[in-house]
Image (cartoon, rainbow, N blue to C red; front, side, top):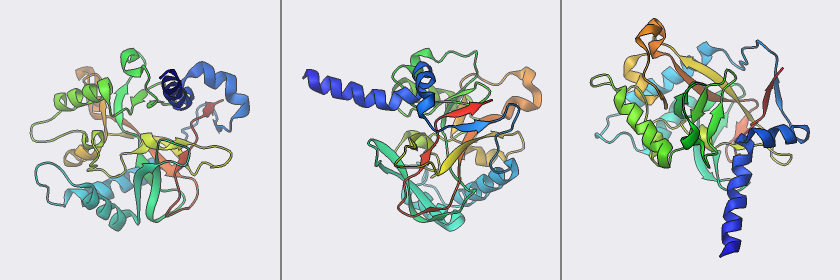
Length: 267
């Protein structure tokens, strides 16, 4: 019994350690990192390219008749293949646990292939309880956190915030990523594993702000929501939503697993 408990602990630690700051600091010398100069926008592709990709995919998804429970995974993947020329799906990783693979087509270099879903927390907002044993906390360069956990308290918080921000008949975020049936087929970036010496990184994270100009009827495919409601003092910034997309750093063929670089240093 004790051995099983120890195995479970070791398994969780191997995943969680990449989010544990003291461990990262002690092990940076042994890790490959992605360096970003101070003040850099850290953009691999332009915001316009990211927006055009999302609008094209979301508009195509929005044309598919829905039965009241959203799209099924097969349908959304078919749309993805038609619009983007490839499919990405979750499967058992080569390094253990869950990973993300290109299952059909080919991803050209400099292409958005996934989004990092989750609730958005500003540095001053409480996230302690949600972060316990949670390996899916993503930290943006400016300190904003995205909780990509689709289970337990994180799931409850996200669902609650999604209902709060609904505007009449319009959903302002995607909730299907909390299930196994994705309306937005690229909302699975939290399951991309860290690269290693054996498996090199083929994608990198890029921050992108969804602005107030983004079509309201397509917001239902954005897999992010703010933890706190927008303030009336924010004006035009009230509909700005922080998202993180994963962009390919080389061509990725069908059958390849997607790996990222968890370590990004800002100098």
